[in-house]
Length: 114
Image 1 (cartoon, rainbow, N blue to C red):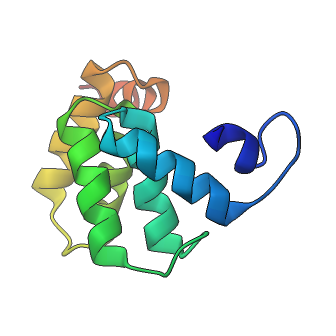
Image 2 (cartoon, helix red, strand yellow):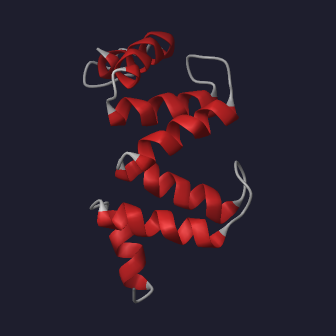
């Protein structure tokens, strides 16, 4: 349901319904919806904008092994926009994402010779 309302294969787009269904799934422990809820809160997509709460959802998903959330945290720590800039944390999350099999993270580490 969440993907349908988020403009999935059907093209139907209802950000508020998408947030509702993703939040329900996230509260049941599903990782991808936790990431969606985090991004939706950061962007204010289908819900009021709340960057701090959004980052908490992303961190939870990352800590539980969701590679997209791990790569997102790496980027956030590298650019210092949503969290204080911390290159050590950025590298740590990049390595976590690579270990979780994220192809972009793997490519970045390979490019730097790690």
